[in-house]
Amino acid sequence: MKTLYKNCMLPLAGGQGGQEFCVGDGKFVLAQPPYDEVIDLGGAAVLPAFCDAHSHLLAYALSLTQADGASAVTAQDFIACAERFARENGMGELDLVTIRNAESLPDPAPLETCLRPLHIQLRSGHAGLFNKAARRLLGLGENAVLEETEYLAATRRVPLPEGEALKAAFARAQARYSSYGVTTAQEGILTREMFPLYDTLLPALSLDVVAYSSPADYDDARARFRPKEREAGARGDNDSASDLRGAFRVGGVKIFLDGSPQQKTALLRAPYEGGGMGMQTMSAAEVLDACRFAAGRGAQLLAHCNGDGAAELFLDALERLPPAARASCRPVLIHGQILGDDQLERIKRLGVIPSFFVAHVREFGDTHLKNLGEARGMRISPTRSALVRGIPFTLHQDAPVCEPDPLEAVACAVLRTTKAGKRLAGQEISVSDALRAVTEHAAAQYGFFDRGRIAAGLRADFVILNRDPLACNAEDLPGLRVVETYLKGRRVYPAE
Image (cartoon, rainbow, N blue to C red):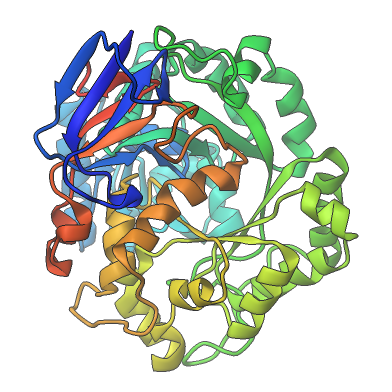
């Protein structure tokens, strides 16, 4: 089947009106007749489909089974939110309810007498609250509020949906990713506890998913998730328009070096406003061991580094690797909220790809200004400084912290405006540069050179937008939407 799409705009290929492209057998091919079908796109803008540079697919699916506490403030607000959610979902009076998206944690005292077990999670995912009923149910200690490693350990005790409920949530999550134009997604930390869940979910996989495990779990993860047909699909081999199954592969190793700047747990080189340097979650020796582990297996290495102190630890460790070993692990610095120009120079020299969580500007920028001061707060997610140095970077949404919408990241990178309306000027980039960060550069971050561009021979993953992003006024960028998403030349959103 050979289809010509005509009368469209390809913004990343010149953006002229009346452009065209051709799809055959799931790939882009040269536009040469004869054609089996000709489709007039009516001047619509077409981009390569998006590669999700960093998120947590299963955690996003689970978030769809949890109550949304974004508007809750007081303890009573959270109790009411939980009871409403329990009624709507047919839960028992003593079933635990997880409430996500809390902008701040309430006073825990009024929750201690609530008979329903409650788990309240800050939107960042780095801290949360368990009331007395939840602590008793899960076998936790006496502290209601937990942060970072203690909190993450506690969340592993929270019961997960089972059977059809889990499958339904996972299907909804994949459909959401597709609706945002994502055809390659990430499982940002594949823990051992998640292995049996993915065994159950993989038969219904419709996206390509690349997963990253801790050094302790990596070898077992690789051994467990290596069916030949999945490996072939992940490399882009044997793709066909009739095969829309997703491919799952363990792509490498993930380590966490610090916390979050919102909670003053990101590790800094200079103190926060009011004091404190943040939290260091790995020693320098442990970071170096992880780098050597990844390099020794030729596995990609992702490092969670929000603060410049964490980035310094990571770069110091990479510097100690021989160049060939460093290249073999294709290091990615995840988040990079606070990076100095000196560190960007090292990032370029060491061949590190920074993946910026630039939506922090809008979602948490006002908090960063308060915690970091004007000078550091203004330059969070320093995309412009990376661009002028010729550093290829990507943008991500870290779902479920934010919706897995790459176009939202593009708008944030261009506008750099906080919720309170403060413009964090000086690090903005152009629309075309931001679009390349979520398409071509994001594909290259994974080492996928069969996607990310609209060019003959590459996989026909593409999206149709509601307007031309290069012709938008800057203030209209948040209104950009994906109208249709195609995977291997077949429409997956809206579902056929």
